[in-house]
Image: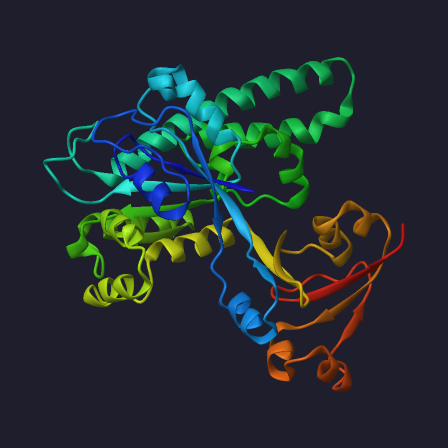
Length: 363
């Protein structure tokens, strides 16, 4: 699963990417410093994994991870190819969720492609380009479906109705993520991979002084997110970059204390992105290895088994499940079994976040 960092040029995308990942993207004070997307894998912070590791002391611990993509800045006219727009929009299409960085600070030393700081305007510029691209995609699909209907294929009547509904929404300059669609309707357009249908987290990049209380710009974005039913996170990306550069743990902790910060906001961003992707974690536990596995919320046990190996899914017999809380409370599988807290579940069992699972299979 991929989350793409998007926004206008020069708003702090690549600097944020560097704070999140082990990769090093080039960042500079000019537009289009990033052209090819930078890709990095990011470990998902999880206190439960640490507690299980402290309890069992395995030879290795493997956290869950997600892929973060730093996509070059979009500009007006991107949907028509401006600023290498077609390439950048294609990069966005390959992601599953969006982290939209908005500049919410004044600094005469850092240029802005639109001249003046106005994060709502910046958001609308990006939205419009994505909406235009989606409209182009939908128009092409309407043309294809209409030809099939004319040829007598009545199976596409519902499909055309959904496409027309989406087109009307886009022509009003509205993002598709605000639509309330049923599962059947959503499945009809799933393969189109529409850009404005992707879930989004807005990251307001502020100065250090505005980190705790925000400012007028962030207040405007908060009001917007209420209407759009999306989420917001306030970060001082330059400060996050400073934190990231401090390798010594005690020095880093001292730095955080100076700014009255409990933990780097970039860690909260990773967790929020994980939620944005509709992901959850289950664990496999043993003396050799403890591992966090990533699945979609709502997956059943058989499908979850396939994340470990396709043979687990094909030959699924049952799963043995222990809740995370029970594992922490009883501290060993022997005591868990004695207390009757180990459950045997079938293929249709819906996995709960934090479940500790062992799969039985036969191929």
